[in-house]
Image 1 (cartoon, helix red, strand yellow):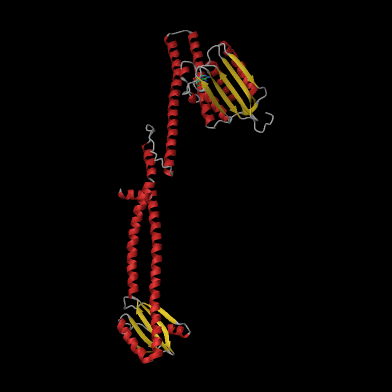
Image 2 (cartoon, rainbow, N blue to C red):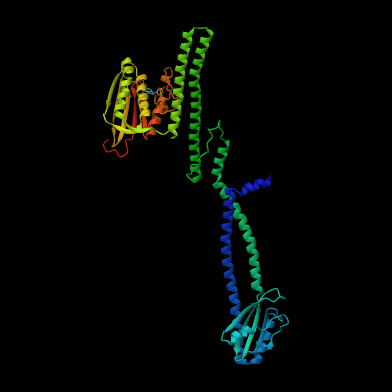
Length: 474
Ligand code: ADP
């Protein structure tokens, strides 16, 4: 259990950010520390070499002023004065033979380095070496230098203080780095958690969301940062999903309702015919009405399918050159008797030769739906005006306006939804699919449809269709 949780944490962004932060922080501290270390180390070792050089010069002066015996005496005295475990002096001939030295019992493992003497003989001023003697805890810095004609001084100085300092420094370094790493990890973890708190909120909200609880939202901090933007985008996505889910629910309710009524009617009629023991005429009437209802049902199902296919771009249009002028005129001729029956004035202004590439049958149906609605929702005595004109270079604009009942502003945005029917038309015949089909058709032809309306005064539907590509005559 604990292992599984740790393993999960290991893959989190918080963990990786913390590690990066701690790692980078420790690395940069490490570099700063090492630079400081090398600076101190080189200053100290330079000091030791300066001291050794000063000694060689000092002995050279003694030799020139007071002679070799004085050099021997001073070497012994100086070693005693500084501590015989701290320094030693040896006087050598150019062939490397020792002819005098301070007390060497502590330094007996130190030999004369032939290579160093050779380098001196080659003309190098002084030669410096660092040696580690296995029997001793600290290293020793040794210098070789001529102090007079044919006389070389080999002197050594314990690097105790230097080695101690380095050791202390190393310990401080390790402890400090460990503390820094832990502190950086804690700080990094805290910062990463803070920065990703918004993401955690999005995740929590996403987990709480189910089909029934689509109203959950991520609280916004309004700081305008990336996480806030993510939360806002997530909330907007949820709004869309809720809209879609509600739409799907309403649509399925509507489908169920709209299919139920004709099926109930068919069943009722069949039942009545059966139970009343009617004659052949009754059965014929029942069959005719069943066919009619079934046709209506089929028409509705086909329209639904067509809208879905058109909206999802699955349907392939039967595209051909269409003369919209003729198409609109024919549709008006066809529906004129209906308008006349309702004493409506039908005013058609359709420019003659307006052509586009499109699906003739779908466009016919779209125009018929708009006209049919205008006639249906305009009380007797009203006016219907149909206008078709060129729009831009190749486009077409179709306008169907009426002086009918109009559409309420709250309902206007929904009239193109499948099965949506406004309050005022609930009692009239209709499926609520006419305008959805019209919009799907317009959009399938890369166009669109818009509606403006004022309740009690009338409505105006405007269809814009792009014209034929590269047709300069339109
Ligand atoms: P319907 O089969 O109900 O006519 P539509 O999709 O064609 O379905 O229209 C959707 C709804 O929009 C209608 O039920 C009606 O309430 C409203 N509507 C459409 N056209 C008009 C119009 N010209 N005037 C007033 N209301 C209209």
